[in-house]
Length: 371
Ligand SMILES: *Cc1c(COP(=O)(O)O)cnc(C)c1O
Image (cartoon, rainbow, N blue to C red; front, side, top):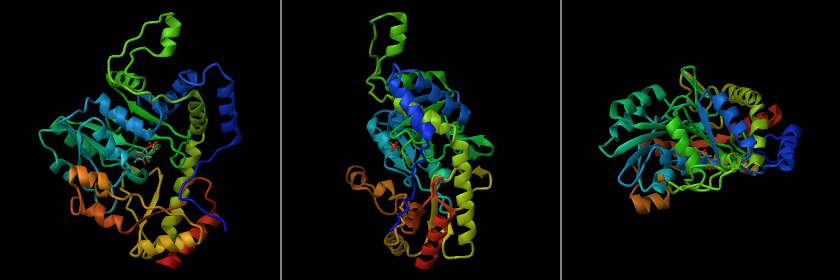
């Protein structure tokens, strides 16, 4: 039986060629291909600076470090996300505070976020869930009013726009992942974007042990000297990964076009049925990392799809439901009712550029049969 995943990468011969060239070059890591990839992603996102790191989780960690988040601080996060969005706050010894999402989009509800602000709050992390940007106009206004930093977890949203402004320009810091299910694949990989040169410098140091000069700068100046000023990590991306990333970026416009076409076809197929896609805000240009629907009998639909080789997924179990959070932070039921209600009904259907029309038709048939 054929199987259809919910997401997967698209790799061409020219991607393979780009990686092969990197492998035969002088630098496997900390070479020129990393900077090229950073430029490609930052330019595409219309952001000033990009700092490539080893994965999206490292990118979130670096963002928290760059903002100086520490013990005693609180950072507001939505629960409808991958655990890493909240974990990065814990890495810094600070406390993630869950604020609920808007029921129709599952994006952080600005009013709910504002209600959670205390004198310990330092930042708001908005997740551009499924590929749709948060209401960054509202979130920014709240952050400005209270003197908070904003971080966009844009792992789903490379190429999305809010009010004609691209993800990468909407928050003080934007974070991407290049895991194979995301828009652009590097195997493992991530990036942090910012317009602020001071934040950029902190991000660069953090990914390299907190050391203030990198290997190439030292090589150029012929100096053995370096010093460690912060407790950083080795979160570097290799040139092999960056070569793949730059090659993938050339295909991103085509990937986005195909994802949007698949979404339009799902929208049409489910109109007037018991399968309810999430709402898309009027001023949003969606990037469709995920195509999420709500169905009344989710577990049954999930099971039926699986029996037919369709591997749909649930994004996400609310983060505050995980045992670690329940046990250490005392979170649990009724903390975020909209996210919790959605959790019972949501399903991410196959959404990736290589999904064929035939496969999509088969998915639609099986979903409609199962509801
Ligand atoms: C994928 C993802 C991450 C983590 O990225 P990795 O590259 O897997 O570490 C963080 N947040 C969200 C919303 C994601 O989808």
